[in-house]
Image 1 (cartoon, helix red, strand yellow):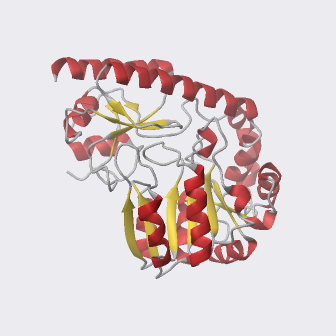
Image 2 (cartoon, one colour):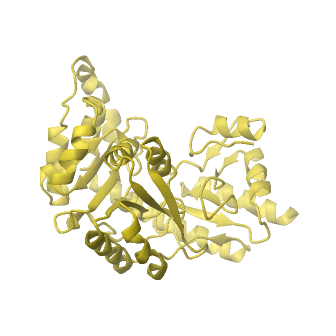
Length: 358
């Protein structure tokens, strides 16, 4: 059985698992804002129609200017991309043929993009359960690589790595001439500011990747941005296809980044529901990762392989994200997004039923 390598699109999951898809399913495998896109997107949608008739601004100047102000960095430190996936691809092209280390478990696109650019890729697998960076083992490896990918807050665990440990990694990378690529796609779901974007001037070896599709639930529009020292960003921009970001995505991005109340409401809901879920799991014999974002890993300690629980939930119309293609997890855990209270309740009911019969 070969399951899809990403979340979302549950019909592919059911097809791969050879399970008949129920009429109604709840997709816990996709980790975007459970409240959907901000209402302003729907309100402005019709007025944006005329923008489909002309080519978009290839520099995304207006959006870049607003993001520059928002993040208090220079515009020439920024690059707007067609979602985080394009930015990952550009970084891989920039490091073509180089030696790359990926701190695992982590997003599979890093490895795929680097393999496509003939990079030599190795993994540094963190200890399962706490997923601490473990600098004693990690730092000596830095001199052996040209680039290191680190996802924090981490996908799939939801863990935020210790800031001092990350800083030591970035500093060691600077000393050894190694690029540290930090993917912050989910930083805006945390209640504290877990970002390193303000360090790009001080550390020319630091590249930050961000997504605008997760918090604002606009994954279908594809929008993200990268930040780095201007000398690095100039090289990345030279690799980017012309007009890769469409005009509607730019307009939506401009509206989304101004939605402060929407962001704060989302953060509070996620924090409250995640805590409620954590207490439920503790009381019912499940193990949950120490997530600080809108998704988490879940394990039934009675199972060495989560496949039976995965199939049980699929039959109930609940779609988790498998972890078979995450090094260091290898299918022992399932990833769930934090959804609205009603949907989370349905998940808990299904898990209680699982425990009752297993």
